[in-house]
Image (cartoon, rainbow, N blue to C red):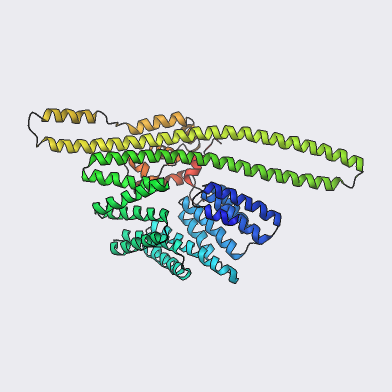
Length: 500
């Protein structure tokens, strides 16, 4: 069950969780600490893969507190907590936990190779973090250390990831020849191993690389290859990324017909991904509920046995009466608890689905309006430039065409956003004003964007502020919300904001 969970983890996270829970149940029946600890780590990894970070974090902390955990178990636990912090963009804590993980070292021969594989992943993760923090020398150091271990273990599966990451780093530094060499080496390994999902990633990376170098023919080739192979394998995330770059490529070339086609492909794929994500969240809640139900059943069963043993010394008749009564009460209590949880679960799912759908629709519609405005402006500018070189009798018709286009502009996007946001979260601003009356109007708008879990890039597109200004605004907002120095995610804080 442990092996099955690891094997299907990348392709089917939900099934991986099923195997992980089954392995955990069997491990507890065996009552062997080494097996139990491995099952616990595997279960935490499965929850991490489906995006249930709180549950994953809780399980990893159980390993850290365990007195029977070995060094590699602790290494894996600290690595997992580091990954959770990285996903939440808390780089400071991510680095802290990664460095703690690196301090562990095993002396058991059977565990040495596992330790090297774990540290290989750790070093690669540190390289990614320092790359995103623009500390390129440190990033390159950790990528090189990870490469050494990959080559030592002949671990091609992780080697291609490190090569791709270091290639991206070289590209950011302007070392394009070295970047291309790494990208092509990773692609060759993936093609040799018939790793289609990896080949798709390489095609997409090379397409973006050539696009940024304005080598449009090669960029077009690799991006189309990524989309075609992605459609065959169902890798919609890569199809979405590649179609975005192709849309931009054709737009820059002035080929608006093809630009429009790939923009529409991007929208269709985005809608499919949104529906899949919604389905995954529902499944996740169902699986979590089922897991909690089983745990409570086990706890109830254990309490039953303890009560039975405790009352066994009292007279046989009295014992039977008391045990029967307690059993009846316990069963009714468990039944009522299950019914109550089922009712609460249905209500929670209904509310969460409704709010999540409205949030997604609001974000998608606003971003779509911005893209539409930008496209209309761009096309209008092109037509006006063309107008001056046309015959006098054609110019009025051209001017009317531009006017018709301009009439479709939606200039009041921010006002429309606030109106629709208040319809969905009518109490949010009231609670915000009550808890933090000193916030400026722009800071309140930023709170609304963050409550919708919008990225800095998306906020920049709506407000027309540069990304650096928004990051500074986020830092000031943390200070005003009294979050400075606390290990608390800003988005999580705003999504859970309530009246005192």
